[in-house]
Length: 366
Image 1: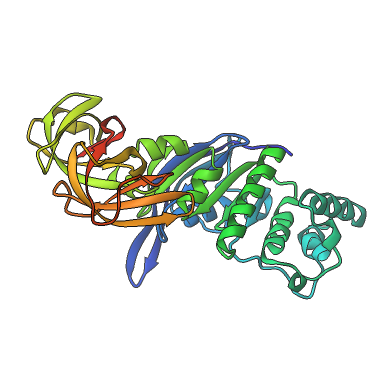
Image 2: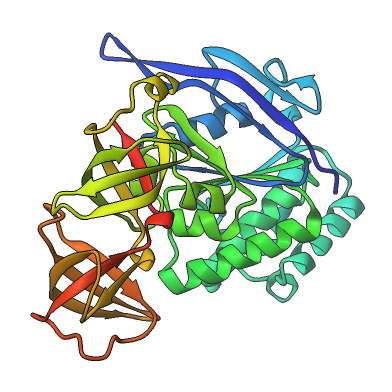
């Protein structure tokens, strides 16, 4: 199955709502390499689905450019874009068998009976659905119905696959199974795939690269590791994974490392700097206010010594990790510490010390 390279430049989509103009997608630009698993991630209403629909041709762009393998896609009608699309709703025909559900689009395109039989049989086998060909959708589980929806998109032999929240209707355990199946299938076929989700764990688990959206704009683009370890804005830091945010004062300037002072007077160095605007490089000086983000797994508790005295207010067993919630003068909000094993000698109500791995912290200067 051929792959395709996608280029999006300054894509903008506006809607008229009650006499006002709402910008759903605001000058979005990105490239997707051929065979890449590329995910658009963000909260509801951030513009990711609208971007996907414009690429598919289901919505028209207000302005911007879309090219696939160098070909202008803006003038190509949806039915000629050779894109397979999977939606949150399975939208299967309940009165048709699984075979006929998958064959339906091919029949509309006037494909010959023998070719339909070959393509449908091969696609059902690819998704391990061949034994269900004569059944109806009601006889299948949610995961099996989602596979049928995927088969219907792949039977066209598309050059690009678009998936819009495809696992939203499945329970948590089945979601994990299906996301791995989709990723394994994508690797096997080598097909360029655009995936839309609001679930950050799902996105980081399957993607080659992520595009994080907020209020119609693409905020950060990178690998899951880059976005998790070096989020460029406080929004991304808060949306991707779990994070603690500590108010600080800049005590020692410098890039890429800086020194900061916590509210309790403790000094930390080095802390990675993330500048929200390039102009801030000339304005950073001692005493400036900022925010330090640090992940719960980069914190530790000690009964004897550390950076910050604190008190344990809650201990929770969360599957494969244990979360310690502590309170400290260094933060106006609770601080979360996560470990894979219980810490001996530390119980709820205990006075302990917080140890901060400052090299893993990120400083946001505002």
